Amino acid sequence: MNIKKLIKKRRNKPKFLREDYGKSHRHRIKEQWRKPKGISSTVKIKKRGKRHPAEIGYKSPKVISGLHPSGVKVSFVSNVNSAKQLKKGTAVMISSGVGKRKKIEIIKACEDAGLILLNIKDTKKFLENVKHMLQERRRKRESILAMKKENAKKKEKPKKESKEAVAENAEKEPTIEEKKIDIQSKKRSLKEKK
Image 1 (cartoon, rainbow, N blue to C red):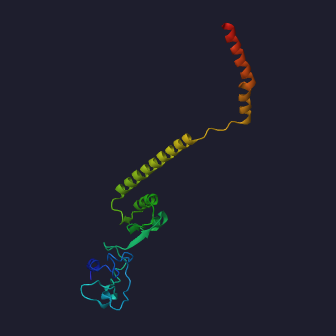
Image 2: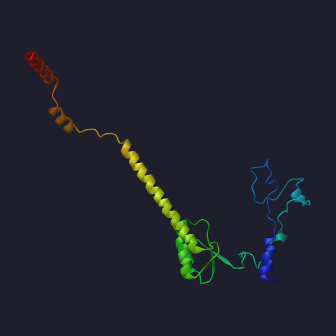
């Protein structure tokens, strides 16, 4: 049988969901398939109109197992070195756990090596978007740092003066006795004027 026909057949496979998934009072139940073990389970009994249980008959042929929907064998790449080791013309998918900065490097390495990227359609547009996003992130960080510095300057307490500076200021300022003498002399001068 033709590979493309087999791949189309594979698309018609039902999505195997766990029994009671999606019911409003069963929020904790997740999507992934688990074999039903209840006595009166409708999925286990294979009742008509209910979910399909996962069975060996749904398995795809060995010829197309592990192939991309386009019919190409895929090799996953998670760093630049693994991209450089592959031959020219092989189909490549970048792993989902790779960050955006590393993705840029991997894309450039794939373009140089002549590899076909399957999970990024337009590489130039993707690179522009990522660079623009990274620049915006830098600007935001810089503005936040500037704001923090300004706030820190505003909150700064006046520095305590050293003992030497305090001693010098004390010498310049007149003592209490000197102030009293000045006040008395001013009073005398006022009396004399009258």
